Image (cartoon, rainbow, N blue to C red; front, side, top):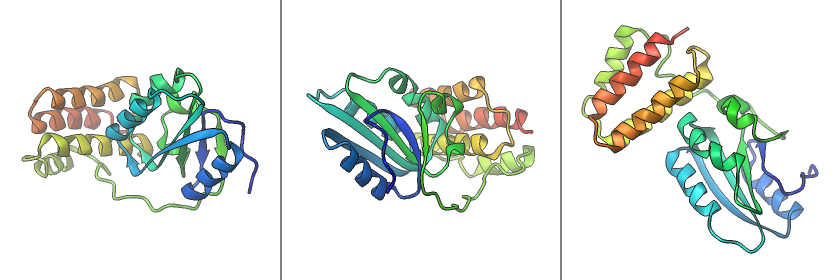
Length: 205
């Protein structure tokens, strides 16, 4: 078992989440651990992490966020608190690959590499996206509700970031954030998904 760093925020690249958390707990015995884990880390998980970060504690606290994938929208939600966490609060992100993390997240936290096995790729819904494929994709969401549309946006954002097939920058990520806000305000899901889909189509490489 490798020696852990002192209690501080960091990214640990690993596919052995439980083992890593146990090692952290042994290395930092005076730290209270709060773990939020999911196969895919979504906005709801980010909001829960932020809420728990601001709960009052008398000692050191480490929030361990573990996931196979962190969606870009969820990562954007975490940026401010990762940069300026509450006093005596540390964030540890556990994920198998740094490719799914935004450069803005990677720049805020040191990266520690541990044991990582190769994972299979999920089905790519945006693969070789063109106008015909986009139309077919949007048809599958023509009766989607807001929750389903939010899930779709997070999946699209993750794939756009990881695939390297799209020009992903701050403007595109902000469009995804705006899409979530529009859905929260009651905009028709089909309209929001079509709007984001057209932006992705224009940014394919």
